[in-house]
Image (cartoon, rainbow, N blue to C red; front, top):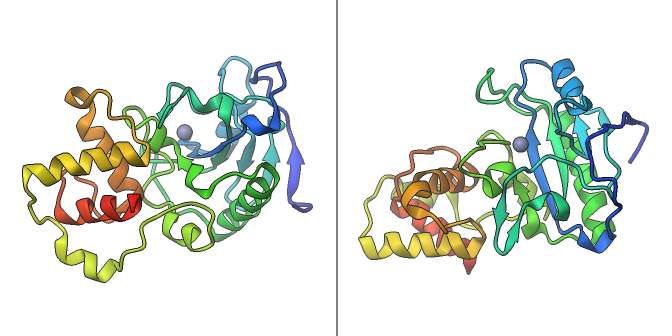
Length: 239
Ligand SMILES: [Zn+2]
């Protein structure tokens, strides 16, 4: 952690300090705002009621907005495994990016380098399991798409900074769009629940959960259709 870091505190956090052992997750976001200045302003504006712990701009400059031991307001209504409302258990990192609504771009290499630095530092400091490094869309699939399909989960998993499947991508492609039985479809949804996705309301939310899974683990095609490739990936992740 170097001279790339500056402080610019947000007023949006819970005043009560939390214990370091309550920090179990890191949630990755994109800002989804037209430009960086606007995003920065929003995250530090008392009227917005949103914030994050770390903001990383497109040049890789890191700004601390809320100290780790205070709960920031980034996750909103969310769920993962038995955890609900993940703000209290997590550290939120915002990457500046216009997002799906304003011209979603690739994350810059400087931005990703800074992210890696922070992740390594936080994983070590709070003993965070790489399985608990998640995207906002993982914990709030009905409302959120960030950090989105351009986020390099696969690269980060090779550095043990998150989890991903271990299957060969070229072999997997053969199973793309291949129909599967309804038994396997049910198994797929059970696998998603085991991974951590909220499958408590499948009638209404099935499509969103499948999309969130694909956005994260099969970013080349997000179509809410459970094909053999999606099924095989889900099976690999829980094994
Ligand atoms: Zn978000």
